[in-house]
Length: 342
Image (cartoon, rainbow, N blue to C red; front, side, top):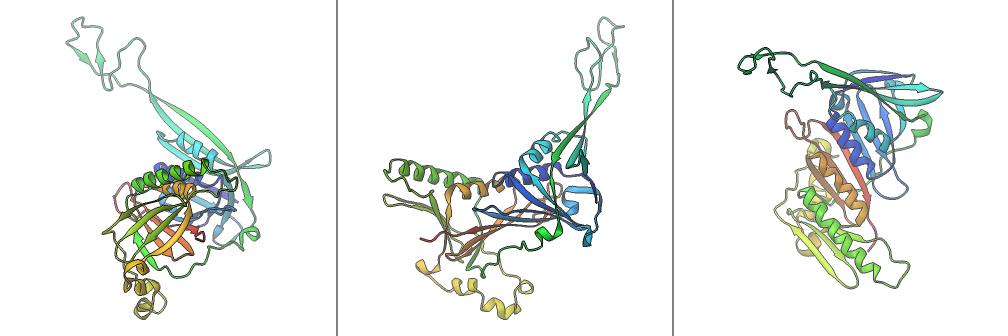
């Protein structure tokens, strides 16, 4: 079993792991010939299924195992991985490989950094310094400033998972979404969501009940470009509503039955409704929702698929930092959030 690769996009890799680590401490990472998959399945809360092409974050990729497609399954602690990646922020190069020390499997990051060395007792200048031979310093002598290369090795203990232990794990199956809509700017949505959650926590702290449930927010959307975030308690109701958002068109090639399938699709039916009947609704735990919105640090757009009173599925598409082309980095990243009952 072998895995070694150069990390060509440390920024995207770091932001991805940072957003995942806010949801859970451990991720299942599956490597194969074509993709790297990050999966989080907590006992409660949001599930994440992210699929990236190898070229998104790796180059000089070497993978070998006895499993078809050379698949390797790893259980990886996210905080140590994030800490290691952050130490590579200003690296000139970084590689990652699967190794073993004292029979403990490790993901080992080798990070190369370069630091400019100044000659002793010389003022700093990126390209030159004055010659001592000329007291007036009118004669400038150009001297190269040497670099010092430093190698940093970060080892992250992991657990290698047998193929049989993960064979039965599959993405959740959800009904066709009643509404699909591009969410408003996530930094704004996150700020308002956290404010609503704090208000709910403040209200519940003054309650004499010892069984007060965690604060829950109601998310609603229509096929007419509207999205609503609201907090409803026994004592108050507050909401924020966005209009003129975009409802992406369905791709007939991705829908069973093609054009006929689209005509019968739940979202097409919702598009014909008006008033409160046009709103698809889910209820989420406020703090979990706030952590999910941390994906906004990665940029790109997020499409929310609302399955009325059942679940919320978020599809995240990132921006290629080199080409500024949306969707060219991430193949698929999905968040599954189960709705609470009213």
